[in-house]
Image (cartoon, rainbow over all chains, first blue to last red):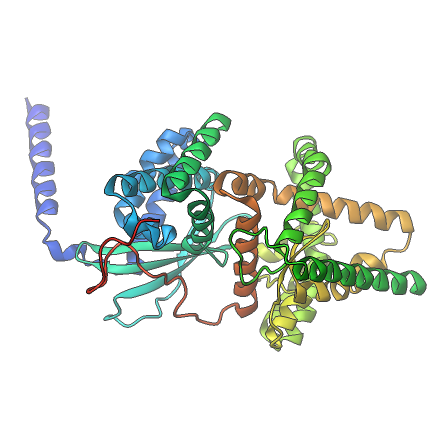
Length: 210
Length: 263
């Protein structure tokens, strides 16, 4: 009798606690950009370390990890649009959606290899060099583990839904800049549909390999 | 010994000149088979040819060797080898840090070398990293960049790979002061050179695979990544507030038409 009551009491307390947490007002999403990056980085690293199948590089699980933990904080439309360049505005909404989908698969597939190598890395976020009223910031981080530390920087913009990442820099190389050239070469040769086809082809051959 | 060094230097100088000459000839004949001319890459046709050659050599020789090395040699030994060559590199990095007036970095590099050599069995153990003594990788190309010399056009060197005009000119200096040059028995020196090349290639195996998967055009991906990284290494640490800003294409600025004339 006593144990069942205790169980019910614990359940009620949990529901109450969750309810309170859910009620936390909307301005809690005004998380500072550097705090946001620290939180996501730690969460992602912890998830990978705890999950054997992620460490073995299982792509579908890595994709869902990225989708759940990372993508909500990325303005991926802006990222893709900047990489595609002026041709973006000439593309149909359907082409734009396909561009985003293929680009996401390309990125996750490629860089998931790096995520799978995680073992004892830790992320340090450097002090933010920005004033509180800046609409855009660069958050600089360093990933330390075995070997030389890796510098990763995130360019973020302030949106009504919180801070969003729209460009990424690893060891001095900005993602959008690099892909701008890649995409413009394809678009000049074969147009937007040609670019979609190339990315799709590349994704399929990567899937076959991995 | 001195004669071979002198002829080595002039050989590299001659090679550089002939590459530059070939490039000039190609450029002047208006070899404009380049679809997307890049301001940093006026010698693109020549560079692409050399790049293809390097890829061939890599696929035939270097990658199989490095892969076999990774599979056969135990991780502990490979880490020791990597630490050993890294330790030797710290000395030249210290010299270049000092030449760039980054005396704090120079001191850390020298301290790394001392700690690892004396307590790390000649550099095989990387104790300095465990003690959080930072490594600051520098080479003469970066020093020239710090002194204000612009990178110049992108060049792909046979065997050495991506470079720039400035870095190609700096290469003989890096080689001249390479610690391995001091190793006396001729054969031991060449074995060490070979080991270092394999160690370097093995440490880049993952990067190479990533480029293969991530790039739509490996040549331009390698070029753009290399140039960005070099620029970032030269300006190292100095804040760049405009970094990573790209024109946004996803929203239409007021007053502009939403559709452009079709291509």
